[in-house]
Amino acid sequence: MLSDSSRAGMVRRHPLMSFFFMAYLVSWLCWTPYVLSRDGLDVLHFAVPRMFGDSQLIGILPGGYLGPLTSAFLVTALAEGREGLRRWRRRLFRWRVPLRWYLFALLGVPALLMVGTSAVPGAWGGRHVLPPAGVFAAYLPLLVLQTLTTGVAEEPGWRDFALPRLQHRLGPLRGTLTLAALWALWHAPLFLTTWSGHHTDPGVLLGYLATAVSISVVITWVFNRTGGSLPLAVLVHVGNNNVLSTVWPAAFPDLDPFRDGLVASAAGFGALAVVLVIATRGRLGLPRPREGARPSRAPQLI
Image (cartoon, rainbow, N blue to C red; front, side, top):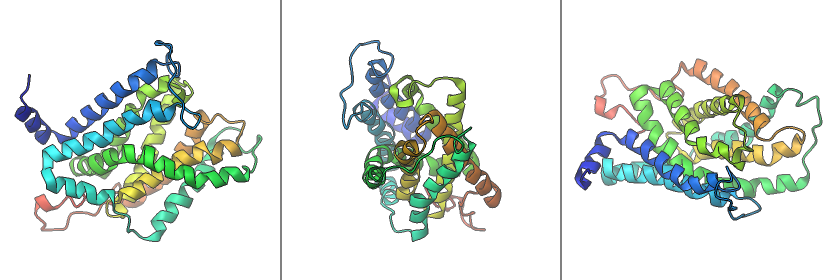
């Protein structure tokens, strides 16, 4: 068994590996009852309690919070101490960014999804309707709920902790692609539950990976261009989720909210992601190190 000092030393030497290992381990352990419940594999023959008519808040949210968020806090504290926690916390509350970025998150993301819906076979040729007023009235309250649940649970780990380190080590594009793959894989147990509608066929899994990659490229660009603003990264992430869980299924009642929603998201974000990669030559908004700057000062977002 490793002593406490040995474990702390290993975390300091390998902060990224420690973060991902802890995030996966804690989340997957917390999700095990949900996966084995009637909402999943029905092995234990019990139902997860409902909240707001759904089992996902109780079944998924504890693992979401205790995985990425707690792991990022603990690894930062052990590896970088108070100064590292201050840097992490500054990005958590970096709200003061130009208005155009909020407009992109609040209006541009829904527009991307509507454009991406054109890639869903028969979407515009089939039945599509204007959602009732109640859907639009609920949109902002549900966006706030998504922010306080999915956004706050996940993004302080994925984007605030892991992304700056992966960009520094692998570069913006490779770092983003690595994070996207690990972020997608973290969700793997949930595909055995009602979260995904029990979709486990290869096409859906590949679609989810494509969506994770496309959204991650866009989030990295927003994060870098806003000087490391986590609130904007959160809004892009939860904006996608909120549209697909409220407005989109009401507008396209004949489409599968999960399977076809992935196609729309992957197509809309993917088109923008390709443009961003080409336009920025893979930098995705990350400033280049200044000539003559000392190496220790080059990573501006760490």
